[in-house]
Image (cartoon, rainbow over all chains, first blue to last red; front, side):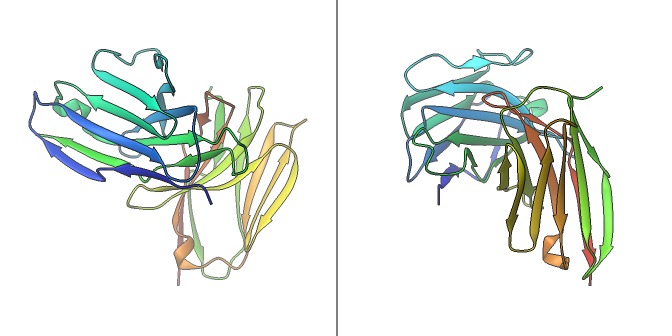
Length: 117
Length: 106
């Protein structure tokens, strides 16, 4: 079945540094990938929709200059948290949609737990 | 009011019990998804439904488009089913329910 690889699974970084999270579709092409954030005991919240070859669409309240999204190929999207602060500590997860529709509509990565100290 | 409401919020069951988790939504949808999130955070897509009923092993998902309601059933529940079950609706802009935390005790 469709697989989305996300890494790192866990990262601890110092306040003020930047962290890059990768989301890769392994056996299908994804023109669209989605980035979500989940705070403890809360539901997933869509942050942005990433389209291959074009600028990402950000949800209201999500700072595009802080959460840089790049979707340079049909199999890779990256989320970079710039100048991270402790309040950015969260669980980040991506999902990808298979344009061939041979697989279920959305496949999720395993998530990245970011801790900013 | 949230666009996607799940109930119950928490559910504890004994091994072998039949489990039902409900999801109601208020927006038009192209599909409804049931997701399973394990304690480590990883998410598995269980079902994608646009009508009727689907079954995978001990899991059954149903949807009533007219009533904007879906249910996830687990038959013969097992401790390994313990997880958070999330209902999500929509197309490109998927919206999530708050999740149902299921604990199945041996």
